[in-house]
Image (cartoon, rainbow, N blue to C red; front, side, top):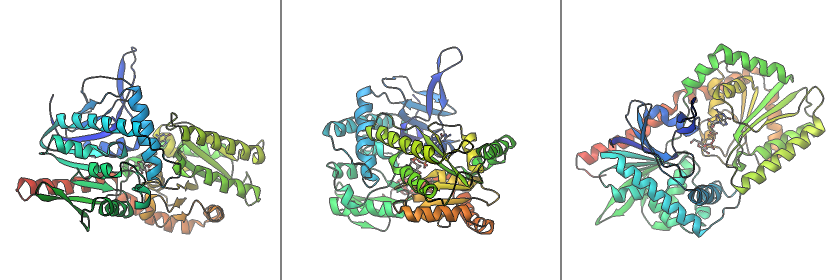
Length: 474
Ligand code: GDG
């Protein structure tokens, strides 16, 4: 097997296995956010990607795809239940999102997490070239950096954390907190979305491991000496130019107009989220329902289109959330829809990106009301496509995107009265104010695209590798 200088390790491979025209299984690029983000970075780099192939017990040889080597990691049904649905999405996800749902601490889940992380690390260690770079992605693989280091001391290791890193008081609940920190500190560079996440991580390190931190660095004891680990924010972004190109396509513009005409009401408000309890969909519906109940808006004034793409159906909290949201939508529609107007158009489906862009173009107001969110790319996508500087972004201050998009209408989604006032303000905002705010936000998103995110991370890695090659140590 050929070895690669850059190896991305992520829970999922960037492809789905689907049935080809003659019934044969074929691989097709999957549409996820992480894939889009790294697609750009991987181009022209002759890299390899280590990840799960998307089906239980799928055991296939590494293969070439779009110029990169893809290395599938086989996982059994039990692994997926305990490592993925269990520890990743039943323990870490809720704990790191400020316990919006209660995390469960199960020793059998932890054991599976260790076993599966070891598998990913072994696959990465096997495929990375001498002195190469391994880039680990996200919370499912927090132990991989240290495991790769143990197997391959010659390589440089990066880790990027896509979700929030919680405050010490919450993180300290995790029975395996020290192991997780040590796992992450196996990396040379640990990247976060926000300044606050990097700060929380460093605080946990000082409190739990007693390692000194200074600025963006942590001093980790290593043999007789110590090793410097960089721990700092690298806010992720989108391929803004690609979204703009879609937004200029005549068929997509026509589709946006058709959506507007079909919806019929004066204003269209839009929500686009994975169906996840972190996204604040319930709070959004509550505020909107009360505006209808109070008579502040009627179906002719505004319609809410809510795309809730299916997510993690195997996890109980997600099944409960779906029931709750669907009951709320049905109640609001039952009470306030008319034969002519539907108060909420609720879509529990995934759509092609073209349709998402048409929806963004059709929306007068975009509602991003997450209770906690690492970044939130939807907010950036909406801003990117609004080339005529119209439209209003209502953005939760608890989404990482709020650090850069301060010109949005920022809300605390727990404050339902505040949300109602802000929604009304968004619906009534004069175009001059819309333009002023949108221009500032668009500049941010267009100047700081995902290509720059990747370049900035890799520049820090290259600098480390150069220093290593010069024999300076880190
Ligand atoms: C995690 C962190 C962080 C959604 N539905 C459809 C669809 N999407 C696309 C959106 C967007 C992406 O999925 C979702 O990204 P988000 O950032 O909003 O949220 P998470 O999935 O929770 O992502 C998050 C991110 O990682 C990156 O670091 O920002 O905080 O939680 O691109 O457009 N795309 C299509 N059809 C859908 O139905 N095509």
